[in-house]
Length: 429
Ligand code: ATP
Ligand code: MG
Image (cartoon, rainbow, N blue to C red):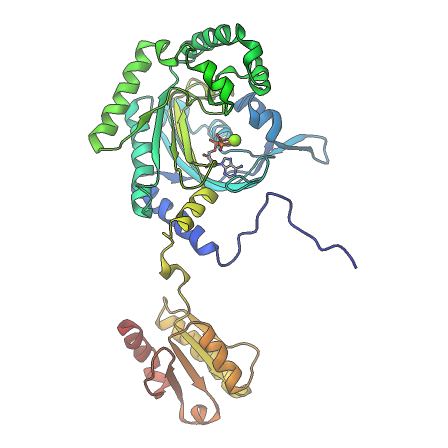
């Protein structure tokens, strides 16, 4: 027997019973972003490898260990996008959309790919919904991005399940000075560091701050702190952000060890975290990346954005029982037809009903079948009404309309009056 084919580990099918929750989440966010004046952008899933190497940075876990990179038939090195920001910046430059200080407020959604160890909340193909804003340097827009996510949590019923962690990384110069101080401090204690952190000391030292190793964390207690190195302007920027969050009543926790995995952040960084999902608790993460566009050869262009993990949010909604029940809404009406002539009439009738009642969820029986079997299917569809069409009904140009969810009698309704009758019945239900 041949081996059954399976999906690649860490790449999930999203099955029909799950897609309503996905659509609910995606639609809720899309509507929200519409309301704040953000526009959608759709970007390729494949890009040249160099884009991510330059944009995300060598020495980051994503670039060093997690990318799906391969040569195409033309020997070009391509990579399945591990995140959305680099591609978005590339598109801005390629189409001149941020030139002359043009403000762009954008969002995107779609699959991302990282070669990670699959576990709950961590997959190799996962989905993000992200937002990016260009050419607005002030803390007002950083605040708006956070306010937007906060409103999403409120809409989804998640406001009490997530907390906001906030930090400022300062200017890239300030960050560099802090990095030197941190490296000097840790270099003296090199032997006490865990192996991963020893490696990061040369590749990406700030990342050591969020090491999970107990010994390393103990060493960090007396290490230099980032905020002692912040430049004045970044301090003012951070104060501006906090004042705005205070003004709308968003609570936050300052976490000086929050540095984010990607190289391109400066000033604001933030994460929304939940304790309801175990160790994969970050559901939304982002920050300011004023230096990224120049890294791609563009003119200095402030940027700020975030990405949410859709799988983690779906898990959170499910865990907390917050998936609205009506999402799995069944059909309204199921048409049963007996005999070839009745089937033809049923098809015509169903299309007339769809014209008259555009929101009607109508299932036409397919595959013929006995009265009993069609009725069983009608019941299983969850429909509120079965319409019955046989030779008798055909001759009289009527249908039998049988309520399926209560004991009321079947009625005979003329074809001409059917749309009106159904509209009235469904309005009542
Ligand atoms: P983590 O520390 O969990 O690895 P990250 O810092 O690598 O996260 P980002 O690159 O900031 O994550 O991505 C933003 C969000 O996308 C994360 O907060 C998370 O919700 C989600 N995410 C990232 N990687 C994965 C993954 N492999 N599977 C599922 N969701 C993910
Ligand atoms: Mg990661």
